[in-house]
Image (cartoon, rainbow, N blue to C red; front, side, top):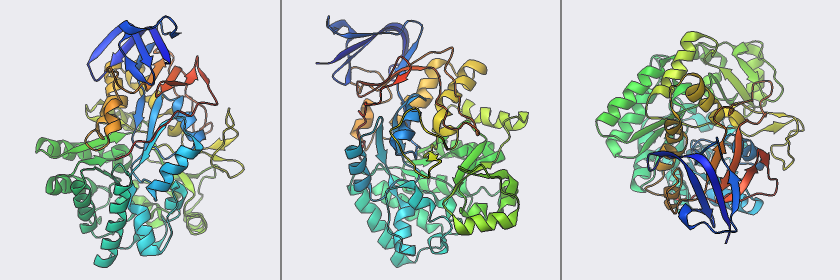
Length: 485
């Protein structure tokens, strides 16, 4: 029997609504009654520190040891790839189990990959790079015929049977696809009791020619089918129209629909440069010019439309930073802060794999070798705590754990039994625990130093096993387990 007692910390349990200085007992991977602690328990001194359930990131594409280690220093104990997902999900789950992961993991069924196979003949590989490479494929971007639609719906059904945690639908990358496709996916998900995780189309305010307004499409599908609909990174897909998007969501929820939503605390987005909405003739929709795009890992700022066309044709899956909002501008910063002041906004990172200078995307070396990613991979949760608890006071500490731990775990309660033991510290809950310094927790990742780990997480336990101890990574710790539908 393994016991760890975390002694004398400020223990915040958003599940019970408690906030008190007390001991927390971990026994054999679960939270136990601290009154039953054994004499031989390992003691962790948490005096002056905040103790809470580890953060549950429902929008993480890292899917690597290196990426998960960066997220561990950001307080994350569960990292789920739900917006895009991986296919075949059974292969992705098996690979993660065989290789070992520091954090818990799970995947949605990938609508993008299923469409890629049926419409473009591209065999799916369980890796984000495979989906990013589809971005510029004109066959993949086209609408599906009824026969094609039925084929990829069958593929998605098989993925759900293999444990996918929902269906990831980045329909914003196929902006002219027939809207009925989205409804068919929603019906399939609803019939299987799982959510849809949607990267929406453009809002009509930004793009008057859009086939259907992104916020309206998501909320209408939720109303018509009854499916649980999750609106991914509402900030980056809405830009300066985020208040209207949130208003549409609130109206849908008030009418009885099940719609949840997330955001990350950055004004700069990131995706594959072959995305339809990054075509030179479409940048104006976002108020962007080519020089607002920066390639990773080279750091090249795109000079003009000709260079943008060249890169999109040669390497459509190459990651690029997209300068959507200017965080130094008071009005843009107010939009970001207003999004997180909204009581329903969940924190989710949209974390991306690190591309190392030698072209690889994973390593067990620590500290990490030279490489690049979006700063949100390493810093989303620590930045949110710094900005919204310590600097602006938009949240208190219990509210921070509600946004980062409790609410995201509850998205999966109905169909993933393991999720019910996460995001809170009740007796019997999984011992996914973060212990942090409330006065010092901060992000350190920037565009120029994107892999700098966050600071202030003193201890991190995943399923009761330490991954970070006294601020140091334990390099042999791979206690992550799969979450399955």
